Image (tube, rainbow, N blue to C red):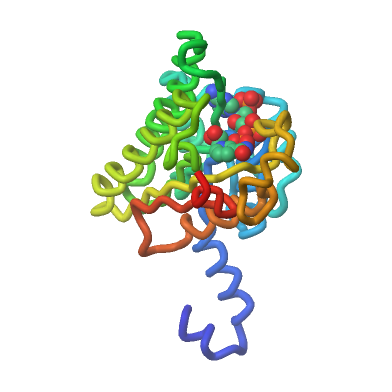
Length: 259
Ligand code: NDP
């Protein structure tokens, strides 16, 4: 196949198509219905990968899947914080679509408050969604990646790296995800499975809709919030980089430098 690629001529186009199919992977994107996850799903679809878009809201996941370019994509409902739902989702995916090649854990939430004002149930929800949820989905995806290898990107936060007053629980969930990412990267490298983390700064999504960009932008060296597509580029880079694992990539316009 590679020989005929170097020797364009009869069958060249066919070989290119076959190569494209060989490199195409099944990608599962948690939190794919909105924000950063949706931008990741769009970029993966543009690269020719088949995408399973997951959020709790089935209609939203399906609606996003239908807007993606290329082959037919799938929208699924699953609460990442619930073990049985995550296991069921991966069972369905592997039975109907085949082995998972890429996993992006972009489902996340915040309930920001000073610790003394944090409600216990909010602390549990944040930890279960952001930290436990990503652990559950990684564990379920690994089973599917053992034979052919794969790549995982967890979405952390600059706040997990630097800490921030009023976000201690959210920060703990994201810092925990960093430790988890590095440890899992060591655990599964021999199986050709890579695990990395992207740590965004302030990105224009529903999560930051209540923040004044002009005000907060003053603290960011690049002077503005990021777009979800700018985070998606970094996610794709890590998914496709065959020699990077256990890495934390900040995508924050330099915000970490001023925190
Ligand atoms: P959005 O609020 O725009 O989107 C969140 C997505 O996650 C939605 O698709 C939502 O769908 C899904 N989701 C939420 N909870 C669950 C759950 N329990 N199970 C499954 N899906 C869930 O968030 P962003 O795109 O802004 O954030 C994406 C990730 O990036 C999060 O982990 C966030 O912490 C992180 N991040 C964001 C930053 C920002 O500035 N925006 C900065 C740093 C990190 P549904 O509600 O239907 O389930």
